[in-house]
Each structure stands twice: as C-alpha cells, then as structure tokens.
Length: 472
View 1 (cartoon, rainbow, N blue to C red):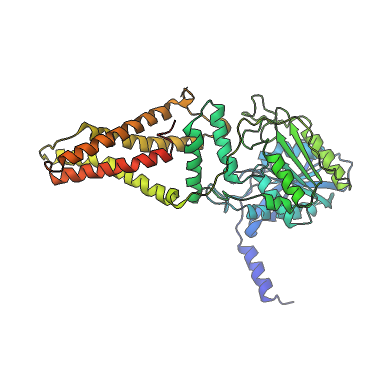
View 2: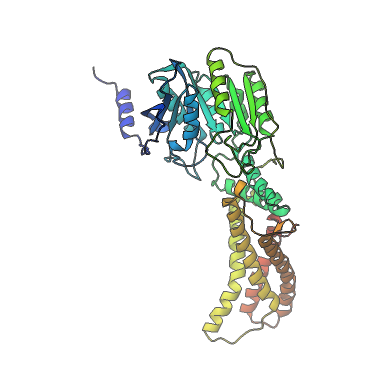
C-alpha cells in the first residue's frame, strides 16, 4: 500500500533524527537480568537504556519504574545503578537510560523535552516481557523532580510518581539557596551571601546562561493525579528540605490529590543515600529502608490501595530559609551590568596604559596624582578580582563551598576586595579634587585622562554598592 505524504514525512523524520551515542552497558549483579533497549525521546532523539529485573522475582507481571536523572549533560545510566539494583531486588522492573546531551547543556535545556524523553522510556518499559503495562510509574531525582511531574501530568500511562530530593520551588531560588547555604555552612555571612551571590545568579539568568530559571512547578504538581511518594534526606544540602514538602503538598491538594506520602530519612543526603558527614559525601548505599519503602509503596499503589496523605520520619535540617529571586529591573539587567563592567575596565586600565605609551614614545612626564594611581590600580583590581572570586564561588558552591580562609565571618579574599573598594572610593574623591585643580594648568590630554578615570570612579560607587563590596 502506498504511504500518504504525511506518513512518508514522518518516516523520513525518524530516519534523520539525531542519535545519542550509547554508553557501555552497566555491569549487573548475577541475581538480576538485564535487557538493552532503545527508544525515541523528545525531538525524535534515539536514546539507549537497560531494563533490570530480579531473576527470581515471584511477581509476574511485575510493576515497572523508569528512573529520571538529576542535572548534568549526558549522564550515563550507570549513575543510577544503586537505585536500579535495589529497586529490582524489591520486585520491580527498572529502566535506566543515558541522559541526553543533544539540546542539553549549562546554557540550554528544556524540562518539557526531558519529560518527553521520560515518556519514551515509559512507553518502552510498558512493552517489556514480564511487565504489567498498567503498573508502570516514574521516579525523578533532583532536576528529575521537576521533569517527572510534567511527564506524569501528560500521560495516564504513568501509574505512580516517586520524587527524591525534589523541589516545589523555582530552579533559580533553589540554586541560590544551595550556594548561600554552602557558604553559611563554611562560616560566611554578610554582603557576600546576602547580596553578591544572589545578584550574580540573577544576572546570569537574565543573560540566558541559567536555563528555566523561573519555572514554577506548582501548577504542574497540581495537575498530577497519580499517587505520589516524595522522599528527602534530612541532610539535603542542595534542596531546601524543610520548605519543599509543604509547597509540594499544597500543590497536590490544590489539584485534589490526597494520595501522597512524604518520608524523611535520617542521616541521608540529597539523593537519599547514606552520608557520613552531614550530606557532604554521598556513599553508594541507599538510606536504610529507602528501597523497601519504594517496593512496598509501589506494591500497595498498583494493587489499588493508594495511601492517604501522610508524612512520617524525622524533621529535616535546614540552616537558613530561601529568599525570593525576582527578575532584574532594566538598570540591573545583564546588558547593563556588562556595559558597566566594560566602562570600569576601560576607565581604570586607560590611565596606566596611556602613561606607558608616553614613556615608550619618550614624551615628557606630566603631573601625576597619587590618588589617580590608587584609583586606577585599586578600582581595576576590585572589579576584576570580585568578578573572578564570585564566579569561583559559583563553580565551587553548594555543599562543596570553599571560600578560603574566613576572618570575622568574611572570606579573607572578600575582605581584601572590600578594602580596595573603600580605598577606591576615597581615591575617587581625591582624584576629583586633582582634576578640578588641573583644569587650568595641565595639558588637555592629561585632563581628559583624569576625566575618564574619574568617570570610572563615579560609576564604581553604585556598582560596588550593588555587588556588596561597600556593604558589611
């Protein structure tokens, strides 16, 4: 029979769709079976995974569960082997897959597309031998806690939802909390954590370098009709473990869903793994009772016995609350911050560069004010040093925060930068006096050079206030 044009176009699309390279199949314990599978994710991307099941499981057909990764590009399926093995030993068929790198990076991602990937995995697991297609659910960890509810809200093929270290808060609010909480854990307080890091993330998000920053998960959670099991470690250092459960519960109840169970595991980290040092180090082993809970809860839910709302377990530890993170106003936007940064660098660097050019050309020296030299060197060091230090903290933030030596609850590096900022403000005032005195006697080129430097000093004052360099 001849294809219709739309059908032929669809077939051509599948043939030309991108392909995600398959990672090496994970090593599987002898008591489990492993089946390699491939499926189409969002945008037709060909993805690869493994289905694990107990070779001795008495339950057949078995419930199934698809595991959705946390953040990270191209994360291999083996990253979730601890969960997959333990869940399979609880009698579940478990599908783990390699996370996409196509269309996913530090600067680009779509929760909706990731949800389509998960739905492709669910469709594949439902067709596997020994799996009851009516009893397949989805598990989402961390970033997957935003992704999995989207998939569940889109498909009645998903029988249940398990969330671990999940957020009912927007990604940018969660991330700024994680970084500032890590700094507080390292003994840091003051403007660095209360202003500088917060403003840095707002600028990054405004510049398009933080994908999905203001995604609101509550409407999606309100659209979830499946039973929900949500798990947090009491020592979660990356997700606010005390604030999130009430937000998730409120959203579910708003949608009329009271079939949820929340559970907190003592001594466990963000992934509900065992941790010997309060959530900093993640051991391969899951928290005691975690896999048992998932197995028994899934068994009850898929047998038609979804539990009513309950929240057992010890209270989690959260040292500090989150703060709302609003989009920046026009004057604090990424483009304005970039313009101010360029102006400051040019204004401060031009002063010594011109002096060097004059010396190389053997031009006669001109009167120089020491304040101008201090403003040029101190201002340039404060600007470039603070930017470098803030980005360093961004890259090493969260539970691994390493601010360096801390004095009086401030990193020594930040105190030095603040001292330079104060000195630069004082030098701005002295340079303004020198510029005024030199207007009638100094050469025109020198007056222009001092004027440009002074303009940089004037702009530096509100810039340094905004970034907390002039605040305690």
